[in-house]
Length: 181
Ligand SMILES: C[S@@+](CC[C@H](N)C(=O)[O-])C[C@H]1O[C@@H](n2cnc3c(N)ncnc32)[C@H](O)[C@@H]1O
Image (cartoon, rainbow, N blue to C red; front, side):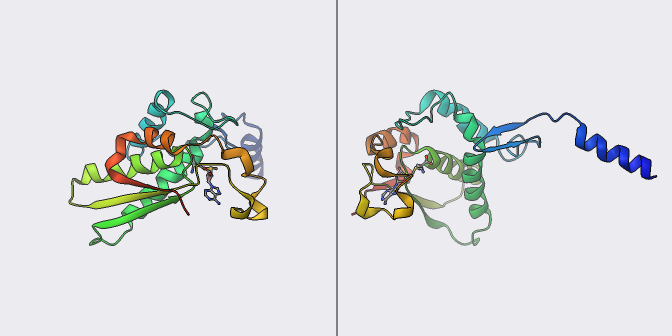
């Protein structure tokens, strides 16, 4: 009995693990949640489409060539949107979504794709608007907490509202853009 358990444990520890995802500072041998037959076809399609159809303005490295390394990041956005929609009150047929820090629209694209797909399938009389905020320029010291300075500063100065609009063109009826005062 003990020998059997020992064997199973050492099997688990020593068995070579196939890596199913590596990126965004993590690595896992588990199946990726978006590889299912039920819910995540739209997420997979969005991830594929943006490889040929998204203009990344950031200088520091996100591009169509490495976007798969961020799949877990973007699946979390899609999951959060779907979760909020599924658990909203049944009679809530008009609502707003807000993103602060839109940049070139990468996370907004995943969010809009998910909400759009969800309502197309329901074909209901629901209205929603996505409000998108960003400075779309170099972030000034006085608009930034000292703890944030490391990650902002001039890092975002190449982002532009025009690029974000163009990246999100497909959903233009569903969003409003705002530059905070
Ligand atoms: C890490 S980027 C995220 C971009 C986008 N959400 C995505 O995931 O693709 C953070 C964004 O927040 C914006 N941001 C950060 N601090 C800000 C501030 N104080 N006022 C306005 N925008 C700010 C930056 O301009 C940048 O576009």
